[in-house]
Length: 354
Ligand code: 9MR
Image (tube, rainbow, N blue to C red; front, side):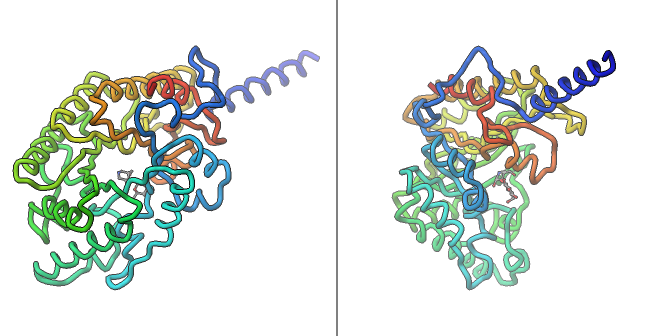
């Protein structure tokens, strides 16, 4: 009997731990009403970055994507390799699926991303040609993609991640082949293709690297001085629970001092900062995650409302996070758990965006 009781007790402990480990919807002091959504609560747009495969195959995922948000970004489907797989071939079928999904529930669609050093097809990395041929290829890509979505996409991440964390201009293929001023020309070409589009420079790390923050602000101010059409800055905010709140606040304030629109464009928050395979989603971690989400939401909410383009969450549930799927790390960075249930982080974020 005593043995049986111990076995049952052990079983209960294991069940309890495994629930916590998956980020169960723990109760907390703050609870969002079950019948309300992020889009309804927020003073600004709330977006999600979506995978076209999951929209097509996972009903719970599609349900949340449809219901909770009023802006949508393609996680991958509008990147160079997805839409322009061969020099003479554009393929917009996945991207169009996302556009149609978003339009079905009247969401804003934010374009991501025209020029980046990653997600390039082989034909671009192997491209042979003089500087005029490179310029033509670069311009053709921007013009064709912006044009294709002209009716539905009114904002684009034009250049993504042009700086290193130390503030130097990243030595990408684009920079090597087109020269350091390629950033300005990308904005110019995008504006020529759709003069009604809000054009963003998008980067990560401005909340932890002051060198990068300064470099981004200097570049943006330089572009503005030169009359280059740039309208917004995306602060990706792939952050983690230990990043300093003071830095997060100060970086957003400094970015806003440019006068441009500010988009927290790829928000997620890592908890397993040392990338330990033994990490667990303990109540302490759960609360730290929730507090950080709330802090970021409230801090963003203090920016001038005319500059609030919105907050986009990068991925929906923990199981579809790029940190888990792409970096292959054990973590719980999202607002929903791997069963697409609201986490404590959801409730705290919800209270922060009001
Ligand atoms: O989440 C995206 C992942 O699925 C892709 O494999 C990867 C490469 O295309 O890009 C990830 O998204 C990135 C975004 O486009 C730009 N900022 C960093 C994001 C996370 O790496």
